[in-house]
Length: 66
Image (cartoon, rainbow, N blue to C red; front, side):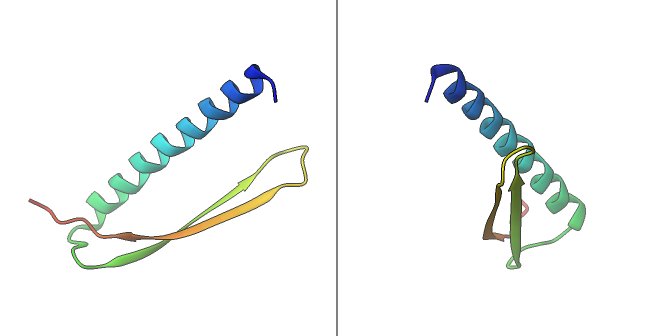
């Protein structure tokens, strides 16, 4: 694959990672005490023009305030 493709892919994935982390952290703050709780997270990636639907699931453990 070309350098331009690789750079655009990395830039997109970095944006996804950073903005997703910010959204999750804000939701955790707004939820109050999430200590000891576990949440199932799911991301569904689609690309317009390509036959792609990729799903990633995982667990996020509530944060401890303090």
